Length: 346
Ligand code: TK8
Image 1 (cartoon, rainbow, N blue to C red):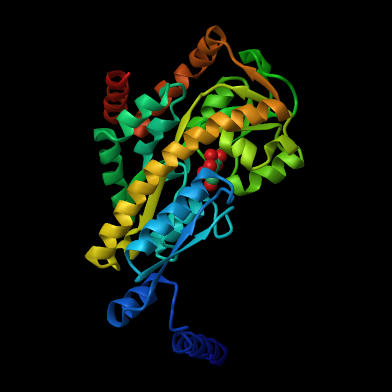
Image 2 (image 1 turned 180 degrees about the vertical axis):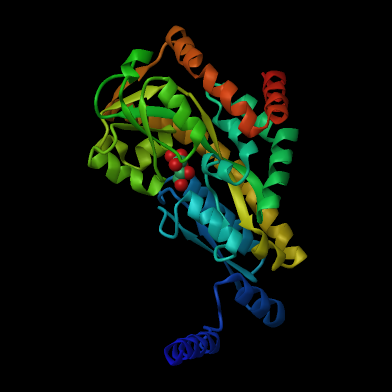
């Protein structure tokens, strides 16, 4: 009994001390909101990114910072790249808790928060960037952003990760059978796992922050990402073969913590939202230019192959049951609506 009282007393003492020692310019939301609303201090907005500072994602985040800070000196944007603060999933959770302000993850890990974003994980659905732009900038894009706000985060814009391609250290991939038993890292997403299994590979879900080491240590044979990531994250150092499959188009989503958003003045909200949208345009343009130039560079550093259209039909055939299976968990009606939008956009 006496011992328990001592423990409770110590804990109480510690939390009083922590509260008393606050650093004036706090970086948890409550601190920031209270301090700046009253004192007009500069608010710090911290962005967590999974990719490094050579990538279009980082460059466009710098553009966002520039746009915000040129419009007001009441906001200061800090960018943390290469998963320094967190991987995609943990960063989303930190937004929900209010211990981080902004993150720009792929949609695949976000499906465990909002299943409808799983439409982007249905393989071979989006064929080119024209269709992508029409669908994302249309009703479907708005409806998804609406659903995100039910999870304590606000989606301000669509950014671009890109069309995903396969790399591996074992062999050149030209046909479906070449995938047999290949240990492929996937994002933490059941549909990706199901699709690679259905195509004969041996998939492993893994956070992006662990991927390079896993390839280096040959825990996995391969992975799939857009060309800019393959080149700028230095995958040719640990992968020999690159195969053009365009099997999935991955959007990035610009997410801000609802707590952070609520702590901003209306003027600051307008500045942040328009900067996220404008930097999103910058990001799409830069990602597409980089995808084209990265492919040319990679052809000089890796053994490149492209799966023929005829062979891709077999890939599509193999994943069909997976698409049917996951329509339910995503939401049958929403998938139908999405596929209609895609067809109309083609
Ligand atoms: C970076 C990830 C990455 C994604 C993946 O945080 O995990 O392979 O393509 O871009 O979002």
